[in-house]
Image (tube, rainbow, N blue to C red):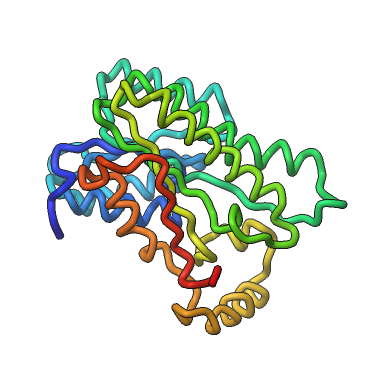
Length: 256
């Protein structure tokens, strides 16, 4: 494993499982120090300990876990204030936390719309705004979007809109924040095996059948979080310095 992130500090939202945790594991093994967020204290502590065990310099505190719900603006602002007090400067931010509550538009509740937009759009927007004083120059911001912004899926309207909303904001921010050396790029995962399916209300049999149906796409299987990691590493690294508002679609050929 290379040490291209040696001396770099990266913040990852929603890093207790799935894509966020996989990215955190890769970064810590390459020498990065991390700030990770989660909304469950027990799971946050477990993830922090797990990551610390992988640290290149285990004697040094390489992982800071912060209890922060991406739907809670007050917690986001408190997190940013804590980082400022501790004089922590960030070289990268992975805006990963997200939710998916599938529902046909005709039956979509106001609560669904409000919650989805709060976590998938307002949360990352407020997080990035609050963290601006903590960002080094240059700094890389990576947003975890979805292939759903490109391909229409029944019952995914609100989810698609929430991801597309931040992508629209990111385009403008790449202009507004250019003087600060901040670049924002996006990955768009296809169907990936994480906790999001169960949290969306699918039972184990439904999830297994859904994943099995993906054997017909070019990659021949459902994606795993590890499949997204190389692109995240690249966008967070200095190698992506020339990219602004790039979108990397990682869907295993699902959209072909």
